[in-house]
Amino acid sequence: MSTNPTPTPQTRLIDSLPVHPHPKEMQILILGMPRTGVSSLRAALNKLSYTTFHGSMMNQKPHLYPYWTEAIILHDNLSSSPNPPPAYTRQDYDKILGDYDVSCNLPGTFVWRDLVDAYPNAKIILTCRDVDKWCKSMKESVDQGVKWWSWDFVAPFHPVQGAWWKYQKFQQRLRKRIAPQGERQAYIDHYADIREYVDEERLLEFDVKGGWAPLCEFLGKEVPEEAFPHVNDRDGFMVARTQRWWKAWHAMCYVCFNIVINIA
Image (cartoon, rainbow, N blue to C red):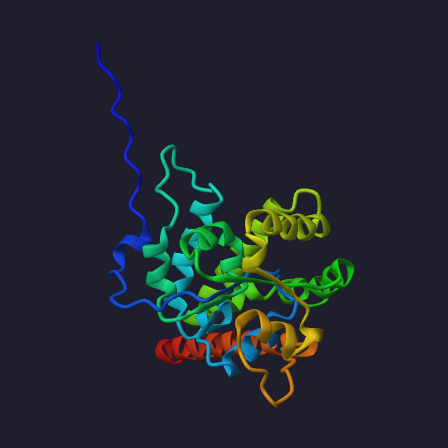
């Protein structure tokens, strides 16, 4: 009697990267939702001499997009394979986070359980905001920024913006999956899940309006004399999205112009 062999897991993209020789010790995981003051907190942590990683930094390192996409797919069991590869481990995350000691918000928030388990000594900060104000902010910034129909047309002409746009579309699809009861409830559930999963002494729920004092007390740092930074408001967010679009537009014009010149 013949038997079918057990399928072997597929090779992961992350396995093609070498092991990080000297990864930094992860100190802080910022796991609050986007548009909850994460950029302001990141600026504050930079002033406290931490080395922070934020998804926006993939502008300079677009090759990281596929690895983070893979991490999210494996974390959330989105693989179509009957025997999917295993989720990322600490060694895997060190390959893409090893130069930093703070992970800020997305994409890390999408794989927060992986990161909490991989870095058991890291402190957890939940940036907080009134949930209804958060929903309004998301609609007026993140959602508006991906509604422009021309993104699909212009983005492929620019290597960085093309990679970014593919990742944005993936995140939008993922948002629908993780918020079956609406994003307001998904926000509430996310914070409740982290409160239940993380030991209380390891966790700080932080409103950036509180400034330096609660943050520095939690981290054991002296309070700086300068004011707590407040950055990346809605207008600044939309300006950044518009700048991305123009970069892609100029790349498209350059490519098309050269095609016409070569034909002529």
